[in-house]
Image (cartoon, rainbow, N blue to C red; front, side, top):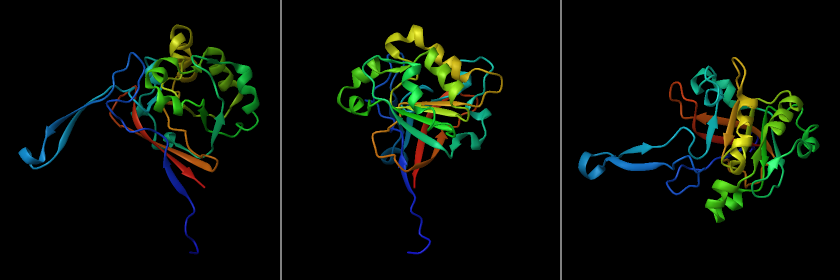
Length: 227
């Protein structure tokens, strides 16, 4: 049909589930009935979860005392119109090195959102415990390389539960500060993304945060626009 849109929409995150994998320090979601149809005429569910459970975003307040909270960002800060997906297969507990990022620099010059596919989608499905504690991640040097070589980057996402390498967290957590620090910094990191799908035609990423005032991050729904 003439004029019919050829765009398609996909979820780039995972549903929040009590049995979903998470880093050792982060509890999984708890869901309990608060009201029920038989007793109250409607279902209402009580949920208990942290701001960094499951597919979620980090904003500067996560690690910077006076950094921007989720509600300090504008709606436009959650919309990315030049995303790029980079395939960088890594092994267990591998820390990304700057030289591994060099091949992506040219392609990413105009990108506002970088998605790194480390190949851990299958690990999430097959071995949740391994995914939770052995996933690869960025360190200080690789985070600094991103800042210096991707000038239009406003966001970063990956198919692992943490930006930093969990097994070496003491050495790599500072990568959060590298990317999120700076007065008025408007930058987001999204962890635990579902990138195990064909994203060759990805043209836009839309992030819908759980909009609670003053949060340091939060569960979010991430949409990918294809075409």
